[in-house]
Length: 157
Image (cartoon, rainbow, N blue to C red; front, side):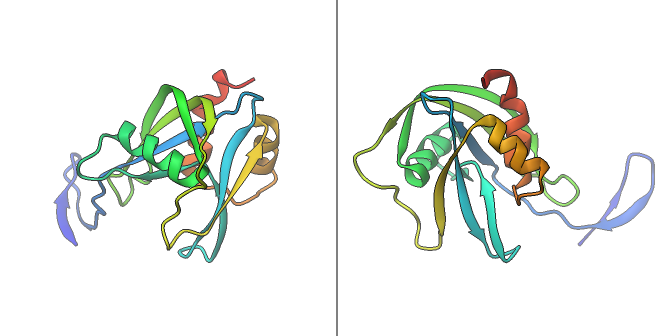
């Protein structure tokens, strides 16, 4: 807990989770399908629909992180990348920034995805319209995936 003075001179106690940042990819197949993951998240006690993502490690750039994560989590490698933008994930209590990328020209790797032992992931394929429908119907989708999907919409057919 930290005692802070805001620019408007108000004082209060705040906590902040310091985070190295995360990187996320929106992988698009040659047929226009988006690759998503249905992943178990213990904090919510259930499975969420998410794009592949991961925490930026000390020795990595966000781009290095997402190139590694997309291969490990989906079993695909992207040969064409475009940065979509970056945004704060939960600025009310954390300084975490998400770096979002569009990943295209995918090739299926010969080896299956290399999941960490604490990952419980199912790889799924959605059209942009199917994903939008799932979001609007209340399917559990994490906020970083929804935000990144909105950044990618102009590039998706």
